[in-house]
Amino acid sequence: MDLESKKRLLEELAWRLGVEVVYESMASRWSTSGGLCRLGPKKMIIIDANAPRVDQIGVLLDALGRFDLDSLFVPPIIRRELLQRRH
Image (cartoon, rainbow, N blue to C red; front, side, top):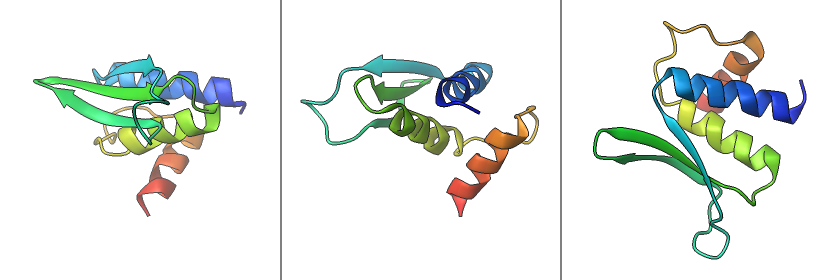
């Protein structure tokens, strides 16, 4: 699976969980590619828009791996990567 397709599947999963995915240019402000945050009751994944695609996918996997996904259909390739990141 190509990186863009994987990123789209992860963004869709975030949407199904009610988590907003936001891309911002963070290079000059932070030394991270992003992560999960909460603003009141709202959950967001903030991702550095300038980070390499593979790093953006890593941020999505790390953030989404914190959620209980047992009741949702997650494509096997994505579920496997989420489980690998937990160990």
